[in-house]
Each structure stands twice: as C-alpha cells, then as structure tokens.
Length: 479
Image (cartoon, rainbow, N blue to C red; front, side, top):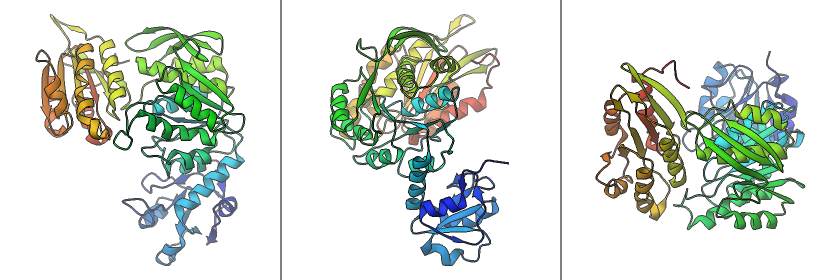
C-alpha cells in the first residue's frame, strides 16, 4: 500500500476548503492530469489556458481518484458525482496554499535552481546524486512555473531529506513569488545567456530577473553563482542587496569555492579534478560535454552546501546519464555498421547551441570499411530572441565550422539566416518545416556518422530523433 502523502483533514485545513461527502483518511499523491492519475490520488481540477480540469472530473473518478479538489462555482455541475470532494474558492490558489503548508512542515534541505541554460540538467543531476545520500524530492520534468512549483511543493513528502526545485521565467516578476514559496537554503544560478531576449533588452535585464531567486533564500542560506559568468559581479551585488548572507561560487576562476582544476573530455564521459571548498577530488562525470562539466560544478557545490555525503555524491556522478532531449546518446545499427545519435532536441538558445556543437566536435566519427563517418548537425530555430534573432542564428556559422561539421540540415523560418551565412564547403540542406527536413536526414545517414539534433522544443525536431530511433535499432554496443 502506498504511503499517505496528506491526511484529508490536513488538506482541508491548509487549503481553507470544505469537505463534501465522506473523505478518505488521506491521499497518496496529487494529480492535475486524469490520464496519468493513479488510484488513491487527489485530482486538482485546475483551469489552464486551454483546458479546465473540471471537464475531466468524471475521467478522474473513473481512474480511481481518492478525492477531487474543485471550485465552488463548478460544484452544481458536479454535485451528483459519487466521489468525495474538497470545495475551494480557486483550485490553483488552494494548491498554492497546500504547497506553502508542505514547505512549512518540511525539515528537508531545499535547493532552488534557475539560469538561462542548464537548470533542468542541474536539477536532474542533483536528484541523482542526492538520492545516494537520502530521500530526495524534485520537480518532475520542467515543472518550473506558476502551477508547476506549487504542485511540486505540495507533492513533497513530509520525511524528504532534500528538495530540489527548478524555477523558470521569461518575464520579470515570475521567479519572485515562486521562490518565496520554495524558501531555499541554497539558490543557484547556472549561467546568464541570451535566452528570452524577445522579452528583455539585454543580458543585464535577464540577470536582474533571474536574481529574483535570491529574495526567497532562508536566513543563513547561500547564493551559488557561476564565477565564470560575465554577469557574476552583477549577480553577486544583487544577492547581497537581497540580504543573502553567504555567497559561494563555482567555475574555473581561481577564486571559485568549487574550482575546476583539470578536465579530460572523453566521448562518453568527462574526468575532472575539482577543489571542493579547498579539498581536492577526482570526479568522473557519466554524461559527456564541456557544458555538462560546468553544470556539475554547481551540483557539487549545492550538494556540499546542504551537507550531503560528498563521497557518495562523487561516486553517483560517475553513473549519471544524459536525458532524452538533453544530450542522450544512442548507437544505432545501420547495415553492418553503426552510427551515433545525439539527442539535444528539447530546447535551444545561442549558448546551448554552441555547447551542443562542441559536444559534436568532441564525438569522433567511426571508420566503416574504407570510409570515415561524418559529423552531421541537424538544427532548428531558436525562439524568443526578438530583434536579434537573425543575427544570432547567422552567428552559428563559425561554431559549426569549428565543430568540423560535414553536413548541415537546418529547418524553421529563422534558420534561413544561417543558410546564407554558411561557407560553400559545407553541404547545407534547408527546409522551412521539420516534416520536409525529416526524410532528408533519415536518408542521408551512413554507418560511422555522428548526428546531432537540436532546436527549440516547439519546432518539433524530436520528430527527427524519433524517426531515426524507429528506423535504426539501438545497437547492443551502445553506451
């Protein structure tokens, strides 16, 4: 039997609701999606931009919901349903109150992560390494917005040892209310980079918005900053102004609290020597890539600041694997040989594009018969770059050349700027839509090749990844 997450009486009190029907003793989880709801969970009928959860109350009941959380205004239409309910003024507001109650009862060490790039990778790596040290609760997927953060908080078990929260934004004043709910002991910013430039004038403004994360830090807590970031001095000043008592840093800079001393990059991992608050350690990172190393310095720093067993943390980093869409690698069978697929299809901005191209450069094509494989980059639009979009897409030409790319497939309206910027010696195929580009990529791949796919998520380049995975079986020799 699953553990009770919340007693029903405690939920009613925390959410300022009123019970309808005979409530169960408690619920085992919280769901906002009737399709994934598990028996015994509470279904919160949140009204979103597209769907209203109240329209799926019957489906939630059929899936075995222990109780429903619904708004008073919709109760007359649901009154005949034979399922216990907690009736509230507003479902999202009630979820937020439950999240606050969860934070108040928790004794966990809490880490909050934001940044223009790397925040989800950092959050997932923290989940992985801290799991070796205790009970960890972390955001699911990228639940980092006005409903994802309170949902993650409300789902946190009372006996969790660590809580890891990703907090995102693309406007001012989005992080502030969320971090004041989370109340982290450590607030980490991975890097300030040109993402969401459509909503901000420059990187300085992005840094100001990201620095809202400092406003929720607990007394005696830490800001954890990237000392190699060009916006470091600004972030340091903003953290101090927000009243953060301690500032720790990570990076290659000699004054970093968590300092990278040596790096050996390999195809399937990275081996580093790092100084952890003055103590030197050799660390293997299971996922490859220079950008991953930078994020893992933040992971080591955050884990150290919350008092985790660093021996276990270091060992756990060796078994870290990149996630689908965020650098996962597959070796796929092709005739009597194989090729490598790097899946970076989840998101893209100028900084993460360069990082992915560096990873492509570091991944050696294989010899197949008399031919050597090629480096193939499959790139889609980077979104939310505003007036600088054409320039920033065109600026990718030099990193592509530096990465020794042999073939370039590009798609999306903004990528036309890159097409005209590419030198003639690199074979380029441009199509505006992913569905036009997909068959060209699938047909072009040969044994020995390394293929890297990257775009902003909504451009849909995951279709190309899925098509390659469907056509070519994963080799038993895959890492």
